[in-house]
Image (cartoon, rainbow, N blue to C red; front, side, top):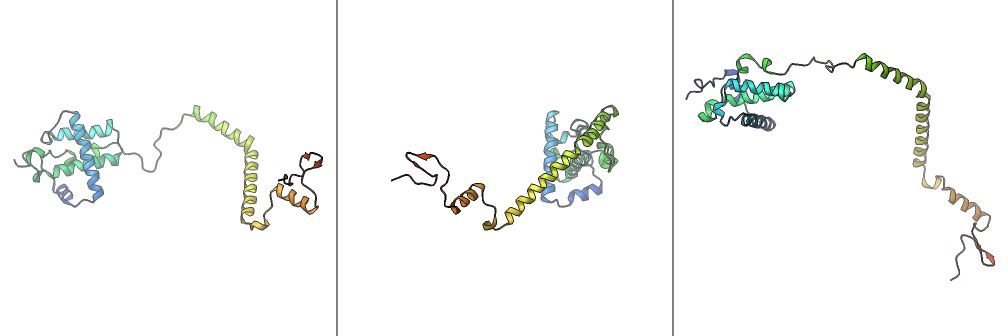
Length: 211
């Protein structure tokens, strides 16, 4: 059967596009979109590509936009993958041909989700009754606690500076631990270190027990 008589006639522009070599990544995405389409067809009890009409393809575009609610560019990729599949009709067996989608002649725009305003935040604004109290409390927090926050930040920075200077200092010049300093002072005075009394004599902490 001639592809044109089966509703598979594709404009020359799309035939040239489909004939172009695809990169590995684009091939992967195209096949993934075909798999999504095949899964959707199975859910509608359509088990042969030859049963895919232009109306079925239009229904799929509605499914993408309204049910799955995919992003506009994601929908473009899905629909272009189907255009590519339709463009292969002349070289495919008759039972693997799908009809040309309507967007090939009418353009994609009518079959895509609505475009968002470029560069604009399209999120619905917070109601004034909600944002008002939040703003009041935010200002109050700044007025009452900003001094404490800044003081804590300054103290943190001071401690970090001390730690950095200590880390950069040669090991021999670093401040010894408090216990080492006390031990050094006691040794300089030739005095025993503090310790518990022994039986009949004073036993320093640095004294070794008899063997």
